[in-house]
Image (cartoon, rainbow over the protein chains, first blue to last red):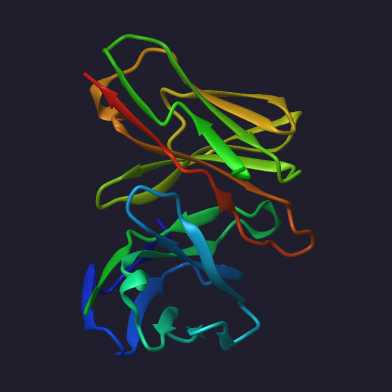
Length: 113
Length: 115
């Protein structure tokens, strides 16, 4: 079946470095993608989204890139801070107007001071 | 106050017991969702509701039931709990976002342990 997956389950970076978290998706019909951040003991929190008619979207210190040719999504975090340490999930909407999200398994980002 | 609240936050129960997890939201959203999170498996959709008269099965609905009592309330029930239902459960809401989807807002989660 269709699925969303992550290339790396863990990522460790130094404070101040840039982080890149990757995600592969397999449903070519997916039209919307979201990145969520989940801190320990909390629910997922929206970071940034991107629609399938876009290649790039920037937020505050974060950028999402979408490559539909290879079905790849990435989250770039600039100047990573200790507070960025969390599990990051990508999610795709494969349900069209029914808007059902399929989540990836998550990547644990650890920022070392 | 939190926009999406879940009760209880933690629950330990025994096999065969009936248990209800409750979710309330003050965001005024029509759409509500229940997810289950297991280590290494991400979030999986159990049930979702697009309005008070609408209930839909998600990816893993077996062993669960839901009730949409009002726009603001969506409860998840385990009629006869079993140990492999031990997990972290999340409620989420969204406003539908017609014609395009938008983000879902998550509650803090309920940690359920079935002995």
